[in-house]
Length: 445
Image (cartoon, rainbow, N blue to C red; front, side, top):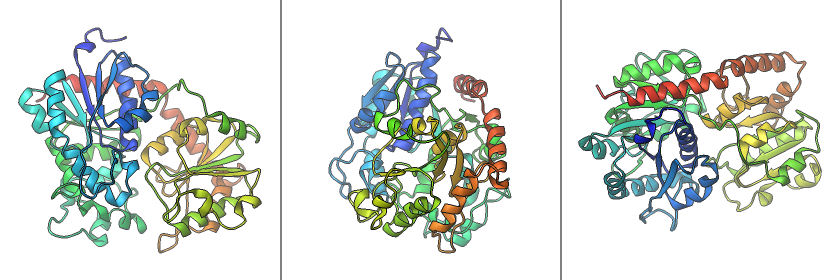
Protein backbone atom coordinates (compact mmCIF):
# COMPACT_ATOMS: atom_id res chain seq x y z
CA UNK A 1 0.00 0.00 0.00
CA UNK A 2 1.20 3.51 -0.82
CA UNK A 3 1.04 6.47 1.60
CA UNK A 4 2.07 4.93 4.92
CA UNK A 5 -0.04 7.33 7.02
CA UNK A 6 -3.18 7.11 4.88
CA UNK A 7 -4.83 4.52 7.14
CA UNK A 8 -5.21 7.24 9.78
CA UNK A 9 -7.58 9.07 7.45
CA UNK A 10 -10.86 7.18 7.75
CA UNK A 11 -13.44 8.07 5.11
CA UNK A 12 -17.21 7.71 5.42
CA UNK A 13 -19.12 7.27 2.15
CA UNK A 14 -22.87 7.87 2.01
CA UNK A 15 -24.23 7.76 -1.57
CA UNK A 16 -27.81 8.16 -2.78
CA UNK A 17 -29.68 4.85 -2.59
CA UNK A 18 -29.45 4.05 -6.32
CA UNK A 19 -27.04 1.53 -7.85
CA UNK A 20 -26.01 4.07 -10.48
CA UNK A 21 -24.60 6.06 -7.55
CA UNK A 22 -23.58 3.35 -5.09
CA UNK A 23 -21.59 1.33 -7.63
CA UNK A 24 -19.24 4.15 -8.73
CA UNK A 25 -18.88 5.15 -5.07
CA UNK A 26 -17.66 1.63 -4.32
CA UNK A 27 -15.31 1.73 -7.32
CA UNK A 28 -13.86 4.95 -5.89
CA UNK A 29 -13.62 3.29 -2.47
CA UNK A 30 -11.56 0.51 -4.07
CA UNK A 31 -9.18 3.05 -5.60
CA UNK A 32 -8.75 4.78 -2.23
CA UNK A 33 -8.37 1.50 -0.34
CA UNK A 34 -5.63 0.56 -2.79
CA UNK A 35 -3.76 3.62 -1.48
CA UNK A 36 -4.22 2.45 2.11
CA UNK A 37 -7.29 4.47 3.14
CA UNK A 38 -9.96 2.89 5.34
CA UNK A 39 -13.53 3.43 4.22
CA UNK A 40 -16.87 2.90 5.96
CA UNK A 41 -19.56 2.52 3.29
CA UNK A 42 -23.01 3.35 4.70
CA UNK A 43 -25.88 1.94 2.65
CA UNK A 44 -29.04 -0.25 2.96
CA UNK A 45 -28.77 -4.03 3.44
CA UNK A 46 -30.28 -4.84 0.03
CA UNK A 47 -27.58 -2.73 -1.60
CA UNK A 48 -24.82 -4.43 0.41
CA UNK A 49 -26.04 -7.83 -0.79
CA UNK A 50 -25.57 -6.73 -4.41
CA UNK A 51 -22.40 -4.68 -3.91
CA UNK A 52 -20.37 -6.99 -1.69
CA UNK A 53 -18.71 -8.85 -4.58
CA UNK A 54 -17.38 -5.53 -5.92
CA UNK A 55 -15.48 -4.83 -2.69
CA UNK A 56 -11.91 -5.69 -3.69
CA UNK A 57 -10.41 -4.64 -0.35
CA UNK A 58 -12.62 -6.03 2.44
CA UNK A 59 -9.84 -5.41 5.00
CA UNK A 60 -10.01 -1.70 4.20
CA UNK A 61 -13.66 -1.22 3.15
CA UNK A 62 -16.39 -2.10 5.65
CA UNK A 63 -20.12 -1.87 5.01
CA UNK A 64 -22.42 -0.28 7.58
CA UNK A 65 -26.12 -1.09 7.32
CA UNK A 66 -28.47 1.88 7.09
CA UNK A 67 -32.06 1.03 8.00
CA UNK A 68 -34.42 2.69 5.54
CA UNK A 69 -37.49 3.86 7.50
CA UNK A 70 -41.00 3.24 6.25
CA UNK A 71 -42.53 6.28 4.58
CA UNK A 72 -46.12 6.74 3.47
CA UNK A 73 -46.10 6.34 -0.32
CA UNK A 74 -42.96 4.19 -0.40
CA UNK A 75 -43.61 0.50 -1.25
CA UNK A 76 -43.10 -1.77 1.80
CA UNK A 77 -39.56 -3.08 1.99
CA UNK A 78 -38.21 -0.60 -0.55
CA UNK A 79 -34.60 0.33 0.16
CA UNK A 80 -33.13 1.41 -3.17
CA UNK A 81 -34.25 3.22 -6.31
CA UNK A 82 -34.46 -0.17 -8.04
CA UNK A 83 -37.28 -1.08 -5.66
CA UNK A 84 -39.54 1.81 -6.71
CA UNK A 85 -40.88 3.25 -9.96
CA UNK A 86 -39.01 6.41 -10.92
CA UNK A 87 -42.06 8.59 -10.13
CA UNK A 88 -41.94 7.45 -6.48
CA UNK A 89 -38.26 8.25 -5.81
CA UNK A 90 -39.48 11.45 -4.10
CA UNK A 91 -40.52 9.23 -1.18
CA UNK A 92 -37.15 7.47 -1.13
CA UNK A 93 -35.55 10.92 -0.74
CA UNK A 94 -37.78 11.53 2.29
CA UNK A 95 -36.61 8.20 3.71
CA UNK A 96 -32.99 9.15 3.07
CA UNK A 97 -33.41 12.33 5.12
CA UNK A 98 -34.98 10.33 7.96
CA UNK A 99 -31.74 8.35 8.30
CA UNK A 100 -29.92 11.46 9.58
CA UNK A 101 -29.91 10.28 13.19
CA UNK A 102 -28.26 7.00 12.10
CA UNK A 103 -25.55 8.93 10.25
CA UNK A 104 -24.96 11.22 13.21
CA UNK A 105 -24.48 8.20 15.49
CA UNK A 106 -22.13 6.59 12.98
CA UNK A 107 -20.06 9.75 12.60
CA UNK A 108 -19.74 10.07 16.38
CA UNK A 109 -18.69 6.43 16.60
CA UNK A 110 -16.05 6.16 13.83
CA UNK A 111 -14.87 9.82 13.79
CA UNK A 112 -14.01 10.03 10.07
CA UNK A 113 -11.68 12.68 8.67
CA UNK A 114 -13.77 12.96 5.48
CA UNK A 115 -17.36 12.31 4.41
CA UNK A 116 -18.06 11.72 0.72
CA UNK A 117 -21.76 12.08 -0.17
CA UNK A 118 -24.17 13.38 -2.82
CA UNK A 119 -27.94 13.67 -2.17
CA UNK A 120 -27.87 14.01 1.65
CA UNK A 121 -27.65 17.81 1.63
CA UNK A 122 -27.56 17.90 5.46
CA UNK A 123 -24.23 16.06 5.77
CA UNK A 124 -22.23 19.33 6.15
CA UNK A 125 -24.47 20.31 9.09
CA UNK A 126 -23.44 17.07 10.80
CA UNK A 127 -19.77 17.26 9.82
CA UNK A 128 -18.65 20.87 10.20
CA UNK A 129 -19.14 21.20 13.99
CA UNK A 130 -16.85 18.17 14.33
CA UNK A 131 -14.17 19.49 11.97
CA UNK A 132 -14.86 16.82 9.34
CA UNK A 133 -14.19 17.74 5.70
CA UNK A 134 -17.10 17.11 3.30
CA UNK A 135 -16.76 16.17 -0.36
CA UNK A 136 -19.80 16.22 -2.64
CA UNK A 137 -18.98 13.50 -5.19
CA UNK A 138 -21.12 13.60 -8.35
CA UNK A 139 -21.36 10.50 -10.52
CA UNK A 140 -23.15 12.29 -13.38
CA UNK A 141 -21.40 14.24 -16.13
CA UNK A 142 -20.11 17.76 -15.59
CA UNK A 143 -22.34 18.77 -18.52
CA UNK A 144 -25.47 17.66 -16.63
CA UNK A 145 -24.48 19.79 -13.64
CA UNK A 146 -23.25 22.82 -15.59
CA UNK A 147 -26.31 23.25 -17.76
CA UNK A 148 -29.01 22.63 -15.13
CA UNK A 149 -27.72 22.41 -11.56
CA UNK A 150 -25.89 25.70 -11.04
CA UNK A 151 -26.99 28.86 -9.17
CA UNK A 152 -27.02 30.88 -12.42
CA UNK A 153 -29.80 28.63 -13.72
CA UNK A 154 -32.08 30.57 -11.32
CA UNK A 155 -34.80 27.92 -11.22
CA UNK A 156 -38.19 29.30 -10.10
CA UNK A 157 -39.26 28.32 -6.58
CA UNK A 158 -43.00 28.91 -6.89
CA UNK A 159 -43.74 27.00 -10.11
CA UNK A 160 -42.35 24.27 -12.41
CA UNK A 161 -39.60 25.24 -14.83
CA UNK A 162 -40.65 25.44 -18.50
CA UNK A 163 -39.04 23.90 -21.59
CA UNK A 164 -38.42 27.41 -22.91
CA UNK A 165 -36.46 28.29 -19.76
CA UNK A 166 -34.41 25.09 -19.95
CA UNK A 167 -33.63 25.71 -23.62
CA UNK A 168 -31.63 28.81 -22.69
CA UNK A 169 -28.28 27.90 -21.09
CA UNK A 170 -27.45 29.65 -17.80
CA UNK A 171 -25.37 32.86 -18.00
CA UNK A 172 -21.69 32.16 -18.60
CA UNK A 173 -22.26 28.58 -19.76
CA UNK A 174 -19.12 27.76 -21.79
CA UNK A 175 -20.30 25.33 -24.47
CA UNK A 176 -22.22 25.91 -27.69
CA UNK A 177 -22.35 22.22 -28.64
CA UNK A 178 -23.33 20.56 -25.35
CA UNK A 179 -26.82 22.03 -25.11
CA UNK A 180 -30.33 20.75 -24.47
CA UNK A 181 -32.41 19.94 -27.51
CA UNK A 182 -35.91 18.69 -28.28
CA UNK A 183 -37.07 15.90 -26.01
CA UNK A 184 -33.98 16.31 -23.79
CA UNK A 185 -35.68 19.44 -22.46
CA UNK A 186 -38.80 17.52 -21.54
CA UNK A 187 -36.84 14.82 -19.69
CA UNK A 188 -35.26 17.45 -17.43
CA UNK A 189 -38.47 19.17 -16.35
CA UNK A 190 -38.30 16.96 -13.25
CA UNK A 191 -35.68 19.27 -11.67
CA UNK A 192 -38.49 21.32 -10.12
CA UNK A 193 -40.40 18.22 -8.95
CA UNK A 194 -40.46 17.40 -5.23
CA UNK A 195 -37.47 15.36 -4.08
CA UNK A 196 -37.89 15.09 -0.34
CA UNK A 197 -40.03 16.98 2.15
CA UNK A 198 -40.72 20.51 0.88
CA UNK A 199 -37.71 20.39 -1.43
CA UNK A 200 -37.24 20.09 -5.19
CA UNK A 201 -34.55 18.03 -6.92
CA UNK A 202 -32.79 21.24 -7.98
CA UNK A 203 -32.80 22.60 -4.43
CA UNK A 204 -31.46 19.35 -2.96
CA UNK A 205 -28.55 18.97 -5.36
CA UNK A 206 -27.51 22.63 -5.47
CA UNK A 207 -27.73 22.87 -1.66
CA UNK A 208 -25.53 19.76 -1.38
CA UNK A 209 -22.88 21.46 -3.53
CA UNK A 210 -23.20 24.89 -1.90
CA UNK A 211 -22.65 23.57 1.62
CA UNK A 212 -19.84 21.06 1.02
CA UNK A 213 -16.15 21.89 1.39
CA UNK A 214 -15.13 20.48 -1.99
CA UNK A 215 -17.04 19.39 -5.10
CA UNK A 216 -15.86 16.28 -6.92
CA UNK A 217 -17.00 14.91 -10.28
CA UNK A 218 -16.45 11.53 -11.93
CA UNK A 219 -15.01 12.88 -15.17
CA UNK A 220 -11.80 13.91 -16.92
CA UNK A 221 -10.51 17.40 -17.63
CA UNK A 222 -9.62 16.22 -21.16
CA UNK A 223 -13.32 15.54 -21.80
CA UNK A 224 -15.17 18.19 -19.75
CA UNK A 225 -12.54 20.69 -18.60
CA UNK A 226 -14.36 23.92 -19.49
CA UNK A 227 -17.56 22.67 -17.88
CA UNK A 228 -15.70 21.76 -14.67
CA UNK A 229 -14.15 25.24 -14.54
CA UNK A 230 -17.61 26.74 -14.96
CA UNK A 231 -19.00 24.67 -12.07
CA UNK A 232 -16.06 25.76 -9.91
CA UNK A 233 -16.74 29.43 -10.68
CA UNK A 234 -20.46 29.01 -10.05
CA UNK A 235 -20.03 27.50 -6.59
CA UNK A 236 -16.77 29.30 -5.76
CA UNK A 237 -15.27 25.98 -4.71
CA UNK A 238 -12.46 23.68 -5.68
CA UNK A 239 -13.60 20.92 -8.07
CA UNK A 240 -11.66 17.67 -7.83
CA UNK A 241 -11.91 15.15 -10.67
CA UNK A 242 -11.58 11.41 -10.14
CA UNK A 243 -11.58 10.17 -13.72
CA UNK A 244 -14.22 7.52 -14.55
CA UNK A 245 -13.17 5.23 -11.61
CA UNK A 246 -14.13 2.07 -13.41
CA UNK A 247 -12.79 -1.27 -12.17
CA UNK A 248 -9.58 -2.11 -14.06
CA UNK A 249 -9.60 -5.85 -13.45
CA UNK A 250 -12.59 -7.82 -12.29
CA UNK A 251 -12.03 -10.95 -10.22
CA UNK A 252 -15.36 -12.27 -11.47
CA UNK A 253 -16.04 -13.83 -14.86
CA UNK A 254 -19.00 -13.45 -17.15
CA UNK A 255 -21.94 -15.70 -16.30
CA UNK A 256 -21.42 -19.01 -18.11
CA UNK A 257 -24.86 -18.77 -19.71
CA UNK A 258 -23.90 -15.58 -21.53
CA UNK A 259 -20.26 -16.42 -22.25
CA UNK A 260 -21.31 -19.68 -23.90
CA UNK A 261 -24.03 -17.95 -25.94
CA UNK A 262 -21.73 -15.14 -27.09
CA UNK A 263 -18.98 -17.61 -27.96
CA UNK A 264 -21.20 -18.93 -30.74
CA UNK A 265 -20.71 -15.78 -32.84
CA UNK A 266 -17.88 -14.22 -34.82
CA UNK A 267 -15.64 -11.63 -33.09
CA UNK A 268 -17.18 -8.15 -33.08
CA UNK A 269 -20.48 -9.30 -34.59
CA UNK A 270 -22.96 -9.08 -31.65
CA UNK A 271 -24.91 -5.90 -30.81
CA UNK A 272 -25.43 -5.42 -27.06
CA UNK A 273 -28.12 -3.11 -25.67
CA UNK A 274 -28.63 -1.97 -22.06
CA UNK A 275 -30.39 1.11 -20.63
CA UNK A 276 -29.41 1.05 -16.97
CA UNK A 277 -31.13 -0.17 -13.82
CA UNK A 278 -33.84 2.48 -13.54
CA UNK A 279 -35.06 3.25 -17.06
CA UNK A 280 -38.35 1.57 -17.87
CA UNK A 281 -39.71 2.00 -21.40
CA UNK A 282 -43.33 2.31 -22.39
CA UNK A 283 -44.71 -0.83 -24.02
CA UNK A 284 -44.91 0.58 -27.56
CA UNK A 285 -41.34 1.96 -27.47
CA UNK A 286 -40.02 -1.31 -26.04
CA UNK A 287 -41.57 -3.27 -28.91
CA UNK A 288 -40.31 -0.78 -31.49
CA UNK A 289 -36.81 -1.09 -30.05
CA UNK A 290 -36.64 -4.89 -30.17
CA UNK A 291 -38.04 -4.84 -33.73
CA UNK A 292 -35.18 -2.52 -34.68
CA UNK A 293 -32.69 -5.19 -33.62
CA UNK A 294 -34.56 -7.78 -35.65
CA UNK A 295 -34.37 -5.44 -38.65
CA UNK A 296 -30.57 -5.21 -38.49
CA UNK A 297 -30.20 -8.89 -39.33
CA UNK A 298 -27.33 -8.98 -36.82
CA UNK A 299 -26.97 -11.13 -33.70
CA UNK A 300 -28.03 -9.20 -30.60
CA UNK A 301 -28.24 -9.33 -26.80
CA UNK A 302 -30.73 -6.94 -25.17
CA UNK A 303 -30.81 -6.46 -21.38
CA UNK A 304 -33.77 -4.26 -20.44
CA UNK A 305 -36.25 -4.08 -17.61
CA UNK A 306 -39.80 -5.19 -18.51
CA UNK A 307 -41.75 -2.25 -19.96
CA UNK A 308 -44.62 -0.54 -18.19
CA UNK A 309 -47.58 -2.89 -17.93
CA UNK A 310 -45.53 -6.11 -18.11
CA UNK A 311 -44.10 -8.27 -15.35
CA UNK A 312 -41.69 -10.14 -17.66
CA UNK A 313 -40.04 -9.11 -20.91
CA UNK A 314 -41.27 -12.28 -22.62
CA UNK A 315 -44.91 -11.19 -22.37
CA UNK A 316 -44.06 -7.80 -23.92
CA UNK A 317 -42.32 -9.10 -27.06
CA UNK A 318 -44.10 -8.64 -30.42
CA UNK A 319 -46.03 -11.64 -31.72
CA UNK A 320 -43.76 -14.17 -33.39
CA UNK A 321 -40.62 -12.24 -32.45
CA UNK A 322 -38.90 -14.98 -30.43
CA UNK A 323 -39.38 -17.53 -33.19
CA UNK A 324 -38.10 -15.17 -35.90
CA UNK A 325 -34.86 -14.28 -34.05
CA UNK A 326 -34.26 -17.69 -32.48
CA UNK A 327 -30.58 -18.53 -32.49
CA UNK A 328 -29.35 -14.97 -33.08
CA UNK A 329 -31.16 -12.76 -30.59
CA UNK A 330 -31.83 -12.72 -26.82
CA UNK A 331 -33.96 -10.30 -24.79
CA UNK A 332 -33.28 -10.59 -21.06
CA UNK A 333 -35.21 -8.74 -18.35
CA UNK A 334 -32.76 -8.70 -15.45
CA UNK A 335 -29.33 -7.39 -14.46
CA UNK A 336 -26.25 -8.51 -16.42
CA UNK A 337 -22.53 -7.90 -15.90
CA UNK A 338 -22.34 -5.04 -18.37
CA UNK A 339 -18.55 -4.39 -18.30
CA UNK A 340 -17.87 -8.11 -18.79
CA UNK A 341 -20.36 -8.35 -21.67
CA UNK A 342 -18.72 -5.34 -23.33
CA UNK A 343 -15.32 -6.97 -22.88
CA UNK A 344 -16.38 -10.18 -24.64
CA UNK A 345 -14.68 -10.49 -28.04
CA UNK A 346 -17.95 -11.33 -29.80
CA UNK A 347 -19.55 -7.98 -28.85
CA UNK A 348 -18.89 -5.30 -31.46
CA UNK A 349 -21.53 -2.64 -30.79
CA UNK A 350 -23.16 -1.14 -27.71
CA UNK A 351 -26.55 0.58 -27.82
CA UNK A 352 -26.93 2.76 -24.71
CA UNK A 353 -29.25 5.36 -23.17
CA UNK A 354 -26.29 7.71 -22.45
CA UNK A 355 -26.02 6.98 -18.75
CA UNK A 356 -22.68 8.42 -17.69
CA UNK A 357 -21.35 5.14 -16.28
CA UNK A 358 -22.33 3.30 -19.45
CA UNK A 359 -20.66 6.03 -21.52
CA UNK A 360 -17.34 5.46 -19.73
CA UNK A 361 -17.62 1.67 -19.92
CA UNK A 362 -18.30 1.80 -23.65
CA UNK A 363 -15.64 4.45 -24.29
CA UNK A 364 -12.97 2.28 -22.66
CA UNK A 365 -14.11 -0.86 -24.50
CA UNK A 366 -13.42 -1.83 -28.11
CA UNK A 367 -17.09 -1.68 -29.15
CA UNK A 368 -18.66 0.65 -31.65
CA UNK A 369 -21.24 2.79 -29.86
CA UNK A 370 -24.83 3.81 -30.63
CA UNK A 371 -26.21 6.37 -28.17
CA UNK A 372 -29.45 8.24 -27.79
CA UNK A 373 -27.26 11.39 -27.65
CA UNK A 374 -23.56 12.06 -28.35
CA UNK A 375 -21.30 15.09 -28.36
CA UNK A 376 -17.87 13.45 -28.51
CA UNK A 377 -18.23 12.02 -32.02
CA UNK A 378 -17.33 8.58 -30.68
CA UNK A 379 -20.79 7.22 -31.40
CA UNK A 380 -23.69 7.47 -33.77
CA UNK A 381 -26.66 9.31 -32.29
CA UNK A 382 -30.06 7.87 -33.12
CA UNK A 383 -32.35 10.32 -34.88
CA UNK A 384 -35.56 10.88 -32.93
CA UNK A 385 -38.98 11.83 -34.23
CA UNK A 386 -40.41 15.23 -33.17
CA UNK A 387 -42.31 13.60 -30.32
CA UNK A 388 -39.16 11.90 -29.01
CA UNK A 389 -40.10 8.53 -30.50
CA UNK A 390 -37.24 6.29 -31.67
CA UNK A 391 -38.42 4.38 -34.72
CA UNK A 392 -37.21 0.87 -35.53
CA UNK A 393 -36.02 2.13 -38.92
CA UNK A 394 -33.85 4.93 -37.46
CA UNK A 395 -32.34 2.73 -34.75
CA UNK A 396 -31.70 -0.13 -37.16
CA UNK A 397 -29.95 2.21 -39.62
CA UNK A 398 -27.80 3.72 -36.84
CA UNK A 399 -26.66 0.27 -35.73
CA UNK A 400 -25.89 -0.91 -39.26
CA UNK A 401 -23.98 2.30 -40.04
CA UNK A 402 -21.46 1.76 -37.22
CA UNK A 403 -21.22 -1.98 -37.72
CA UNK A 404 -20.24 -1.39 -41.36
CA UNK A 405 -16.50 -0.81 -40.87
CA UNK A 406 -16.15 0.38 -44.47
CA UNK A 407 -18.78 3.12 -44.24
CA UNK A 408 -17.71 6.73 -43.67
CA UNK A 409 -19.72 6.87 -40.45
CA UNK A 410 -18.26 3.61 -39.16
CA UNK A 411 -14.69 4.73 -39.94
CA UNK A 412 -15.14 8.18 -38.33
CA UNK A 413 -16.65 6.77 -35.15
CA UNK A 414 -13.96 4.08 -34.92
CA UNK A 415 -11.12 6.61 -35.40
CA UNK A 416 -12.50 9.07 -32.82
CA UNK A 417 -13.23 6.28 -30.36
CA UNK A 418 -9.65 5.01 -30.73
CA UNK A 419 -8.25 8.51 -30.13
CA UNK A 420 -10.27 8.96 -26.92
CA UNK A 421 -9.31 5.50 -25.69
CA UNK A 422 -5.63 6.42 -26.15
CA UNK A 423 -6.13 9.69 -24.26
CA UNK A 424 -8.05 8.07 -21.41
CA UNK A 425 -5.44 5.47 -20.50
CA UNK A 426 -4.76 3.69 -17.16
CA UNK A 427 -1.78 5.96 -16.31
CA UNK A 428 -3.95 9.05 -16.73
CA UNK A 429 -6.69 7.48 -14.61
CA UNK A 430 -4.28 6.66 -11.77
CA UNK A 431 -2.99 10.23 -11.93
CA UNK A 432 -6.51 11.53 -11.32
CA UNK A 433 -6.87 9.46 -8.15
CA UNK A 434 -3.53 10.78 -6.86
CA UNK A 435 -4.59 14.38 -7.53
CA UNK A 436 -7.97 13.73 -5.93
CA UNK A 437 -6.28 12.49 -2.76
CA UNK A 438 -3.92 15.47 -2.69
CA UNK A 439 -6.85 17.85 -2.98
CA UNK A 440 -8.91 15.94 -0.44
CA UNK A 441 -6.18 16.16 2.18
CA UNK A 442 -5.60 19.89 1.79
CA UNK A 443 -6.91 21.93 4.74
CA UNK A 444 -10.24 23.69 4.17
CA UNK A 445 -9.52 27.33 3.30
